Image (cartoon, rainbow, N blue to C red):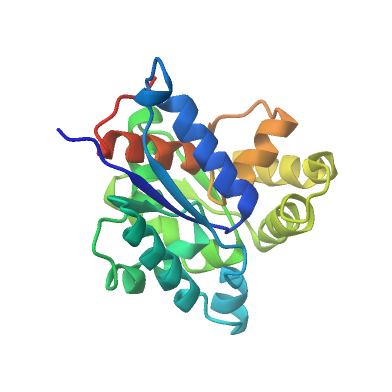
Length: 234
């Protein structure tokens, strides 16, 4: 199979984009520079906030995302991936303008959960929009993955972690109490593991060294993209 190139439709946010790029590089089986995947990145941090658009009628990010899509295709990307879970709300419309496949973070994560946590119950963590629009629900249900979701208080705590700490560039230690509270609630509701369904959450969980079982959608997406492009993972 011929090797393909990846296009990362990034900027949502920049740190999450860097995390995805790093994971692709570290997970690709390679013995030298030339063994790695060609990757095009459009890190457009001007893309309007997805949650703000979906829940509060803010500016529509689709025109910006279409612009990034066009740039990545012009560079020669053979597939497109987006390191933003909430942005996948707009994926059905964005696909209409695409000439190459999109690899969905939602579907990649559902496949990963089924493989790594068979018969176990997930707790979906994410932005208020990701949870309100039930972006993960259908993907998990299609794969037969049981799940629970946070309470309204849990959703507020997650938004503080994502927006007030990680996206704001503050020390992640400031969100430890919120993260622990959300996890405690999930365990009480029957969760065996947690889907870090916002690309800022794996960054926080990793730095906090939380001792729980997590499904990292950024990892799942990186793995799916590597395999799609005809490479092996380590």
